[in-house]
Length: 292
Image 1 (cartoon, rainbow, N blue to C red):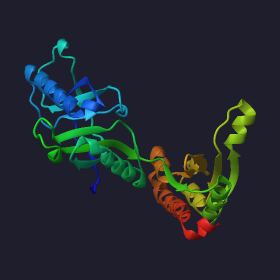
Image 2 (image 1 turned 135 degrees about the horizontal axis):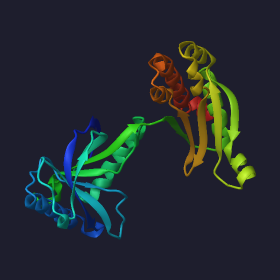
Image 3 (image 1 turned 90 degrees about the vertical axis):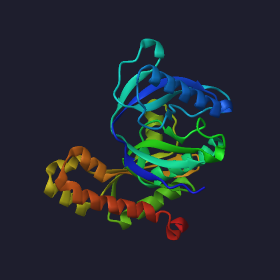
Image 4 (image 1 turned 180 degrees about the vertical axis):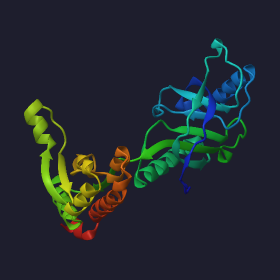
């Protein structure tokens, strides 16, 4: 199925939360049992539900072992829980989440997670917390798995970096990146070969890892004219490192740095720097760049 992903801020709410065990080979049964348990606790404590039940996964569900997950139930303000319940009331602050809905069996939920994570990466965000599943229509309501509706949510924040992933060898990626940055007005002030530095200084062995310190003189002049403290953001680091499938190129996002410094006068310069860095990294995927 095709997934539509949206970004929203959750409303503050009080949640009844209890840790319970589920098994992947008895997933539907475990979800139903958890829903029944959290509903029983709510009823015994005189709580009134105000939303769909949820599960928060603090680690991935293994293929052949049980894990502890947090069953939750949004509730209205109510009495204190007894200690024997094993549950607690937690107040959840507003959180920025990426979310999508899955219709059908839980066995196919991986596709929703993949679509959600792809959207988060492409959209320039990063996950900052465990995923939560909200059972809008759960197995306690319908017997046909095709009628299940599950909302998957991942808490996110703007990514601190602009990234591109390249196929091919490391040396070629470095040359292509230098050229792409030069085309957008960035000069390379220094290069730090972290693989060599760590090997020689502390005996550590890591993958190919190069840090380019780059600067756009025109934008640097504008930034310093606006605020002399802008030098704290100059130059901009661009990191190249190998991974399992190629070379990852990441540049620090100037807009994120400016927000940290709370310097509104620098926002236009940071926005322009970001635009040029995005253009440089996007060009790495062009046929001309691939041909070298």
